[in-house]
Image 1 (spheres, helix red, strand yellow):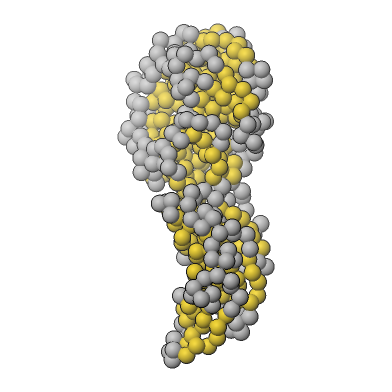
Image 2: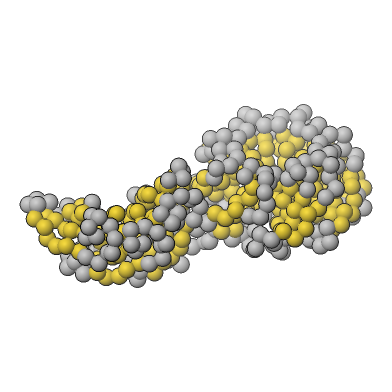
Amino acid sequence: MAFSPDSTRLVTASNDRTVRIWDPATGRELRTLTGHTNGVNAVAFSPNSTWLATAAFDWTVRIWDPTTGRELRTLTGHTNGVNAVAFSPNSTWLATAAFDWTVRIWDPTTGRELRTLTGHTNGVNAVAFSPNSTWLATASNDGTVRIWDPTILEVLQTPRARTGPAHSMAFSPDGTWLATASFDQTVRMCDPATGRELRTLTGHTDGVNSVAFSPDGTWLATTSNDRTVRIWDPTTGRELHTLTSNTDTVNALAFSPDSTRLATAAFNGTVRIWDPATGRELRTLTGHTDMVNSLAFSPDGAWLATASFDRTVRIWDPTTGTASRTLTGHTDGVNSVAFSPDGTWLATASFDRTVRIWDPATSRELRTLISHTNVMNSVAFSPDSAWLATTSYDGTVQVWSPDTGLVLTMIRTDSHLFCCSWTPDGRALLVGGVEGLFGYNLYPGSPAG
């Protein structure tokens, strides 16, 4: 049941397929609305009192004029009973939740479906907008509550083609290939549009930790617990070089923007820079006192940032191999580091459950982002530098505004998450975890757009 915004009317829904409007002061029935062909589960007034929405087991949502009782339109699209309806506070959107596992957002003025939100793995029972329309919360029989940003992002969760944990992933520069690394000693390449596996790269003799394409698309590099770095031709899958100078597990790598250098990091804290064309080692960088987990070149290639379990991030001149500065502030090991593509920010993620954003030119910490409830494993900027994605063992992927430090959306999965990567066009985000890969299409603009 629901009261009208001015409290002069009370609406009730029934399994007898009717909706009734009452005068709550006198108990008098004002009118009966008929049209549904099965039990009615939910009713809601729009905050501007213009509409009354009803949801039923007949798979439809109906919008009525609450003053006259006239049916204005029938919304169809759900493929099972509809359990809940909610208007946004500004009456712009109508959200509906159903047993078909989906949430749909509609324009109540036209009845047009604006988008479908998928990701729940069982019937969705409840839906609610935050008072300022910033968030949409949904609750499901799958035991989860998901929070969406209806004004900025559309989130569509789709498992991708691979079984088992995905520990690292990378898109080719043109977005036509997705490479994923796994502890099954293989690297798999698939078509990200279809999920079809194109080829499997074999040769490593232990789990593969990291994978990266060169920016010019010429090479694919991989690191492994077998202490080697391998460079492949991604077009043919042929192994070109095996780099073997390392004396410990190699767990991270990054190409320079001009593809002329490859940096790798090892458990023993050393960073090595290689010529990927020849496989020759150019120099070794030492200074960290514990394992180096992640590294990243600045967009202009002038700096190399490294993140370590020693709780520090170091910024190096990759040409000379000298460390120019050390960033301190994290209170536990640092797992991931990334420059924004426009060079404005450097983001770091840590075991201390925080993300920190720094000015890479001055090393000044700009803000600390706190929201995750477990170890942070990866950070990735969108190609336009507008968004920062983070993943954690808490099973969530969160998308932030690096400019304000605000969470724009949070997506909860049933998996410890290890890594994330944006598609080159910035419209999709892939996340890897214990349960494999999850893909999210992120569309800028409002639902009415």
